[in-house]
Length: 365
Image (cartoon, rainbow, N blue to C red; front, side, top):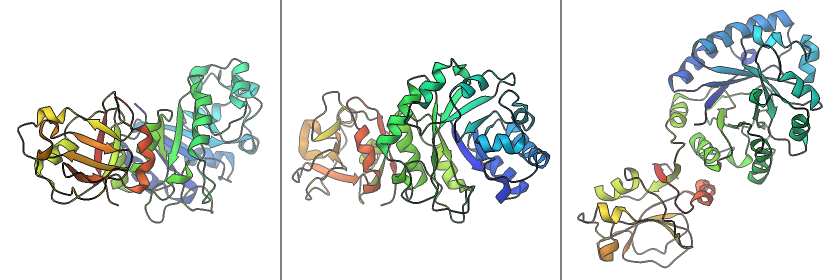
């Protein structure tokens, strides 16, 4: 199971507010915390004292803190690659290299006596990770995380996300990525702020849709909220994601019977192995609910990709089947359109594959 995380930026908030946010996130099972030293411009001892108390609070809650750094931070704080004790002293579980070194340095740092994790920038599509692996690191100390992008239109596309992530997965390295809270008055480490996400397509989406998409890819392990502070409802929505099943958002039509609602939300649906090009069929509900009546309704409109239908009483033996429409088809009086996957979630349709177990979550248009 992947872990959920939040981000905190002490230089832009107060200790009390950050602690309260950590408490709230821990309540919903969040285990990771991202914070940033790149934007901190204070003396070393002041930085140490400030972060030590906050990170200590996170540790007491069972959370793991990774701090974002770069070579410039090492120079500014007088940290050497052979003495990483500063990070241990502030209570961090490790540090993320926003910018890398030469491969040999990263490999050497994985053998630090403090047992710190070295988090690599997962967004690099060059031979960076190969250079590190050529220097025989302790792979058990390596993890990775993508960037977030404060400027609109600068986030990566899905093809790039997959390419760079798979470079890490090839070596068994876990990959994390960021999602963006849609709450008002959130912020990140910099004065430029237009949302914080890894995938550009996620920038304006509901946060749970962003996270469900990342988990569905199969190559993103952990999901971290990049901006602070997410709302309690957003934290709750992420905590409720079933990572073991593909979860699709559905906008319901009105007037559904209880049997239809049960098939949509309570039945353990899965796609038949012999999937049609026109629809993904969950066929077992026709057996379980064969004695229940499903009256015809919403059955005069042509079927569009993303529609969700349940076969009604007019379909006899097949009544109760649930279909996700993959290609447009003519209207059929035997098929009730019970809802549809909204346009902003159509990216999830690529994961509707033979034998996939799936469920629905009611969402708004």
